[in-house]
Length: 107
Image 1 (cartoon, helix red, strand yellow):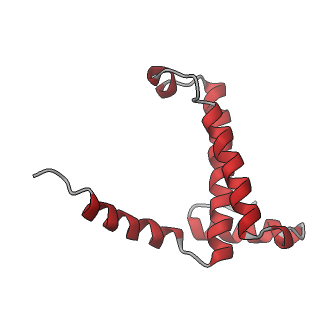
Image 2 (cartoon, rainbow, N blue to C red; image 1 turned 90 degrees about the vertical axis):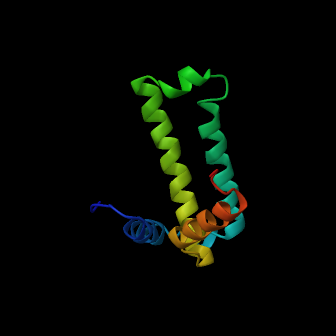
């Protein structure tokens, strides 16, 4: 697989990966958001009973497993945004502005 260094390249690689397997017909917003929630729950499982200290200091194996789950979440979120025609970077930028108004920094 070619080098993926930004979100647009990741999106394009995911499009090609899904097209090669004819998965686009399954990638409706409903299905993608359900898969996303499952992967997010799998990520939660790695931290569910950990102390704050344990969560900050995973073993190398735990770190690798968490990285896989983060990748799954990112993949499904990227595909969902693509199907819905939402630029996730623009959406995040706009949300940061909204949050700055909603939660102003102390003076």
